[in-house]
Length: 399
Ligand SMILES: Cc1cc2nc3c(=O)[nH]c(=O)nc-3n(C[C@H](O)[C@H](O)[C@H](O)COP(=O)(O)OP(=O)(O)OC[C@H]3O[C@@H](n4cnc5c(N)ncnc54)[C@H](O)[C@@H]3O)c2cc1C
Image 1 (cartoon, protein in one colour):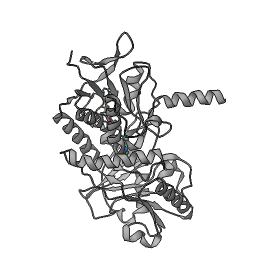
Image 2 (spheres, protein in one colour; image 1 turned 180 degrees about the vertical axis):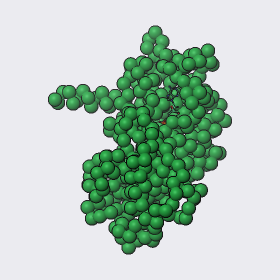
Image 3 (cartoon, protein in one colour; image 1 turned 30 degrees about the horizontal axis):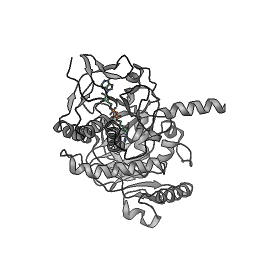
Image 4 (cartoon, helix red, strand yellow; image 1 turned 90 degrees about the horizontal axis):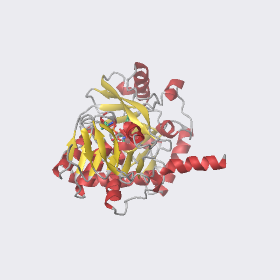
């Protein structure tokens, strides 16, 4: 049997590594267990944006703002360079119908305290000289930032290890163990049990399988997304640029996009991200296809076509790589950062869908506050696991 710990964290993606770091910072003896290497799941198959601009105004955007502030501290605290760049981001507006929704989006976000503005047509090409001539406006958010997501995981892990955390790689967790009273007493792994009175489950889209071993249903399913990586090339976009219609593919509704039906079928919306190395990333798609991570040429071709629509100058730039990851999707687009009331000692930190990189610091901090009994940095009510049961019970009584 391996030495026990104050807390076992299951899953070494960006969420588990952030949780491990913040717990270790509180002086707890933490053991992070992953069935592969750290950053071997979705956190190494994604973009690295930390965006408030695409969050629902209110709790969602405020939670991201808090995380953005934590990132500012982390770039000082973490010695491993995770390529933090705070240059803001923009959403490209294609027509008058989108403009109306975009202006309303900006005024709601500004009212909620976000540093956003609507950029008029005359200024569009000053900000993004390469963007297509017919783009009529931009939505700009000054606090948005980008980073390298894999490097962020390594930075959290490196810092946690120097604070005394243990990282167990290539050790699969088979289930959660409980004592006679039903409280957590550790995890069972392929190499035997590890004892702990507290377990944080942060295994991304694979969390529901582990939760099931103690009869907990997690409403988390994989939502596939693909990315294209370009060769090193000329400066195409100065910073993060997305199409305004991205909000439609993420949340649905609002206003229509004039795209061929297959773009909507695969949830394709242009997300452009320059890297510090001279390449750029093009995203992305949104599909519910189980755990299949295949990149199909059909989807990749549509993504490339969509990117060329916004940046015509890239039509001859070579793509050097593509990959797909599985976003841990929940039905209300909010993550689950919560204790499990009926199993003392069990905590859940997953379901961040397309925002796990951005929300990793606030998630790690809040879990550490829950475990150490401190007041939480944000209200955790909207993130509780039992919200789904309450909604289901409410739906039954009104039916
Ligand atoms: C195309 C795409 C673009 C994205 N862009 C962004 C973005 O710009 N900004 C943003 O904030 N988010 C983005 N995301 C979302 C983000 O990538 C995820 O929300 C985040 O990576 C989820 O992290 P995680 O730690 O929960 O899961 P993961 O990174 O998947 O980590 C889970 C870990 O659990 C381990 N594990 C699984 N089962 C077991 C077991 N039985 N025992 C032990 N370990 C186990 C796995 O090996 C894995 O390492 C994007 C996602 C995609 C797909």
